[in-house]
Image (tube, rainbow, N blue to C red; front, side):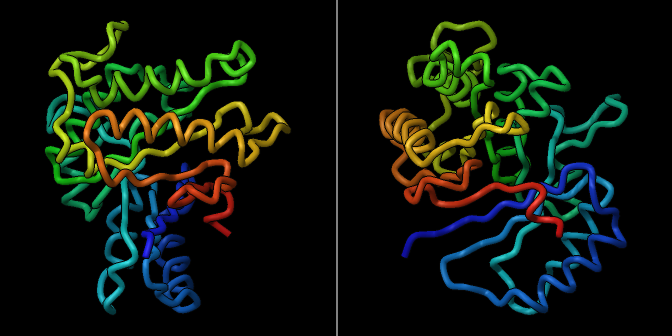
Length: 244
């Protein structure tokens, strides 16, 4: 049976008390389904409350995750949260390179690579987000952008990140590490623009990601489809629909 993963990104919503109330109702109304997992990416202040609310009762299908981590394990980085701190709070995964982090906070390809490494070292599953903007799509740069983001964050298997600026300083990740990573395709051009990504749009990018990973020995990649469209995707990442 295929493993299906549903990821709920709460963004800057739901404090600790609201999170506990929501998850109490969720656990009451949502019974486990074989082969399906639900991951909740909560704000940092609610992370521990979410992790505690998901524990017990034999619910191995539910998991708490961080929305962002710093690449350093500790230090003078006011306002940041490290991988070890997130793990101590109960996180088992972390988003990396979300489109809002890239666009609003200037997160670079080099920084996503460092955060992937930091998540792996902290024992967290990195959920690497990739995707193109509307301008990049209209310039027919979809495949180039997604491939660049993958190579920069994960390494191109040829001793670097494909020759572009902002690549991995430590070279490509090994196959074992690649198979611990979840990749989420975000068609950024379809968010808040009134335009929708079709199954064909998503499938084109999924094929590209599959080929890229297969060429580096990753045999069991897991997919999240921000467009909620491609039936060959192995999961969904959603924001607004996960807080109601």
